[in-house]
Image 1: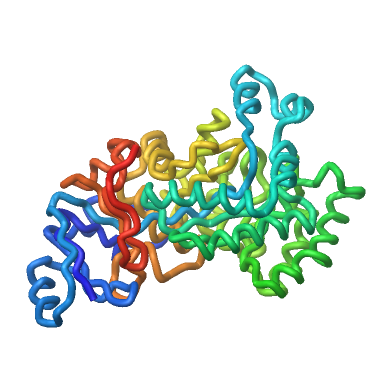
Image 2: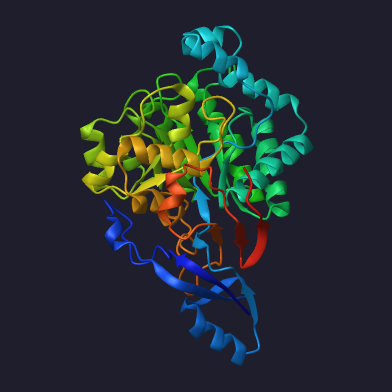
Length: 415
């Protein structure tokens, strides 16, 4: 058992609602605070001196800070494609030079380029590269990371990716949450149409995922360039029958995906850049969490998810990095969330909620995202005395320390 502190400010994110707008004057801020950790979980938090007296009586350890730190729950990134091989720098250059998606694809770019490179990589290479990216994310304060497949696009290659994610998870300090995105696009080398490909996944992939316990989550890209709502319905129906949780790449360029997410009671609908007031209203009335991916907007040079409108309508808004080689190569969750806040006029509370407890809810992980007794002791500290400095610096103020399950796993500011 140990006491961590004192923090100049500790933001437990407790008592805030899952849905709707948040005002900063309601954000709980504990002054000169600490928290007691036992067996990886938070036992108590509050005034540092009072907790120090308790810990001394019980002969526990005190991990003393300098008192010029702000503490927050460890960040949760609820949408990434961090398992991949290769670069799409050529795509980025072509896109900024004015080429369209179709032109880039014809020139050998696009998702299929990453599929080809990832298929060529041994599973061990994918594991090593994923662990390197996870380590960088952990240093940024991200203690829970969702990781998708989707660059295999065959039963064999999707299993290779998911096994790589599983093996990396065993070696990772951060917790990895695997998701199967075999329905990313129709593979160019598949001899058949979209319904036939999805039927193959139903028969040959989903049962193996269950047998090997490779993931609990199924995702699909619903878009004119990928799968239609009609295509995906039998696939999602069978995935749900088998007990998988669902999430959807929805409304990125055209609408339709968010309605599928609502119909199938998905945990989240992610992207939503194209969502109109009608889709926003339906999402807000549903139990689906809206996940904004500002990294994709920055990478593609397009508009952001209508985060302000979603929150004003009463939706739950998570914010994720979408770290991927094509549209979101930055992979800096805090920077992307801060930029989204500036463009969409989000309060500090709304942005921080979007990368803590609201993001945890998008992954169905109620044991994290808030600093409360009984929850995981995942914690990030920033070297400042005012929590508002964190988003003000838009990611250039990095964490001074990161704890995972109460253990210090990162120390020292990094760029």
